[in-house]
Length: 204
Image (cartoon, rainbow, N blue to C red; front, side):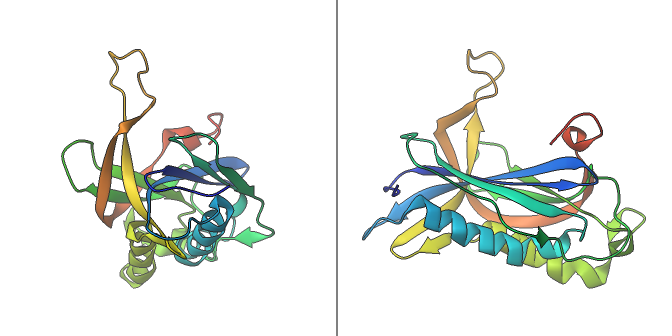
C-alpha cells in the first residue's frame, strides 16, 4: 500500500531487555509532490535509521524483535517486519529495564505538550551517578538527530510530529486526536530517567 499527502504515520519498534518488553512509538506527517512511496519502504527506511542512530546507545542485551507501521488517517495502510538478530551495541552490565535514556521532542507550537522518547538499555559504564558520561554524548546526540530528522523515500518526505490526545473529560480520553498535530522543532537528550510501564510485571 502507498502513502498519500497528509497521511499520519505511526511507526513502532518493539523488543526485549532482561525478559521485559520495550516499545517506542514515533509519528510522522507525510508530504510529497511526486510518486507516492509504499509504506513498507518507509518502514524499512526508518528501521535502518533506528538501527544506525538509536541502537548504538542501547545495551547489547536489547534485542529488536518487531517493527510496525500504520497509517492513521485513512486506516488502510499497514506494514510490519521482524528483524533478524538485531541487538544494541553497548557492551557491559545493563541497568534495570525500566531505566532509560530520556529525550525531549521540542514542539513548534503550543497546541500540544512537548513529546518524549525513553530509550531502554542504559549500561553501567556509560553513566556515573545517574548522569551520562561525557564521552557518550556523541552517540546520544546522534540518536537525537535521527529522531528530529525527516524520513525521505523517493518523492516522499515524512516529517516527525507530536500527535495530541483527547483530555480526560472527553469521551475518547487518552486516545490520539489526529486533528491536533504539532511539528517537532528539535530533539534534545535531557538525562537518565525511569519508565513505570517497563517495571517488572507491567510489560512494555
